[in-house]
Length: 367
Image (cartoon, rainbow, N blue to C red; front, side):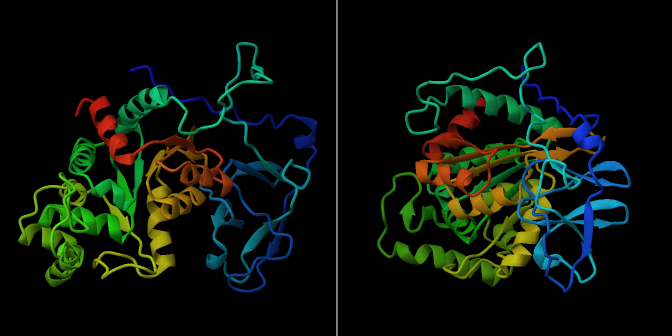
């Protein structure tokens, strides 16, 4: 296997601008859930704060939050979790001038002379679109997933389209059963239609293989939800109804955690679905906080939500800093481009049908 992690190039704190930088300012939060004026909002990149003449890294970050100094460490905290009196870092300059240094260049590829190779001033097809050739991306993903199976934590974010096809359900189940999925994030619909596929062989009343719509099939997904609620939980439904296939079945069998967060339009929903959006966000973040690779497929809202809480780096248990790989897969260019528009600048997009993507990945891994 040829995959190799990029080496993190730490900032040079011997530069005069950083050596002579002032201590970062701290101000107490005036009320619960309220940051002091001039608070610093965090990004997806590594961020260092000068405290006690040392530059300290905020080890577990996410964008659009605040940095709090507590017990000698920097904690990145959502505004809703601020408590009155929390010591919040303030300052809007990110170049070290106010004791805060945002560092986007840690994983930049350098040449043998230590200087980044300049790009072409003019070149065709530099965007990621339906005209992009993704062959190399697939090869990279195969190598990455093989590496992460042994060394990382892969979080998959799935929309309901992933459960509408028999082959894609079977392919993703193979990924779960063979250790390439460490956590699954989704909504009520993905789980409902996947369980419907296992229970009634349909998704939204349409045969998951032939795509034939059955008379009265519009009842099937709510019948499935109703039966799951009758049994009290998804695992109980799987056991009592003899379910033996599908994405959620595989997660339950392999004890892979799945987080289902609801929306305003949900039917039912299933018992495990978080109805409180902030409780759901917290559950998602518990998975994301371990992630070294994230792959989002066919769900714009869940993809953006996950992207907004995923930093571009991860502090590993041994103290090393490694890159977090983030892919977003959708047949819509709008959907994948929205990730960059919403701040997830490290996301790499693949414009394709997600059913084909999952099948290709499963085949590429020789499952």
